[in-house]
Amino acid sequence: MPLTPRNAHAALIPVLSNREIVPGIFRMAFEAPRLAAGAKPGQFVMLSIPPTHDPLLPRPFAVFNVDGQRVEILYRRVGKGTGLLSGMRTGDLLRVLGPLGNGFALPDPSVTSIVLAGGIGFASVHFLLLKLLKRQTAPTTLLYGVRSHEEIIPMESLDKKGLLIRVATEDGQQGVKGTVIDLLSTTLPRTENLPTATIESFACGPLAMLRAVAGRMKGLGMRAQFSMESRMACGYGVCQGCVIPFKGDDDPKQIKYRKVCTEGPVFAAEEICWDAIQE
Image (tube, rainbow, N blue to C red; front, side, top):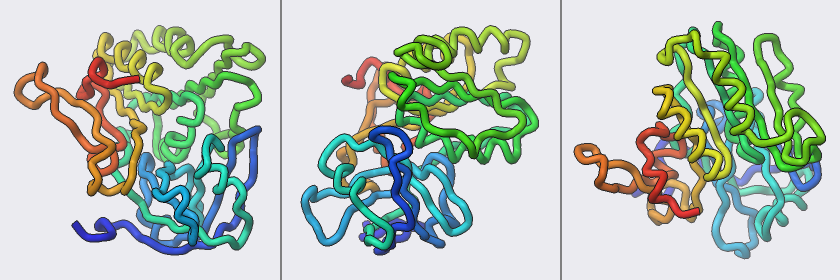
């Protein structure tokens, strides 16, 4: 296995901007022409801060946006690594490896798309939404849920004709009081007259949310692509520390494992063994 995976670019890159857009959530930009040219919705990058080795391992972050040669990520400050990341300023150097993984497969433009994002899972579907809005002729709906209204990410870039945005907050201060699952329960009846083959869902969020969405989609026979999260040490298949269970090809009761970093992070929801994944 080469040190750098094929089609990925490793470099020290200066930070262009790094701002807190809502409490505890940051939007960072850096200029990376080669990464920007190859990045697809659902892919990710591995980031670390030189010359420090504490934390030792890089961290994975979804490609949030690509604008020309500019690449952006969205992240929540939760631990030491993201704490250091949040303190970076314009001109500081960042070690970047990417783009990595397999992203979302874009549907036919005539397919109705339902995109679900729970919390910081919005970071993994934002770039997808931009692509869908450029090419889809069928409606696209975003179902977005957060714990508090203070965590809602600004969506100026998605304020385009044809996108329906529905928001749920657990504190009930904005949108529907509840979760993404509550939004889905009231959205699906609107698609009852559409053939299931003309609808596809895309999701990223907490495991409990994805498990519930997968159950709904399976019961309706709808296609679903999920971006899965897992702890990663390398990002390109060497450490094998990011595996999750899947159904066997010949025997659905048999469990096999796939690496989120190289075989994902996007998978077909029906292939995943949800009962075998630990919370």
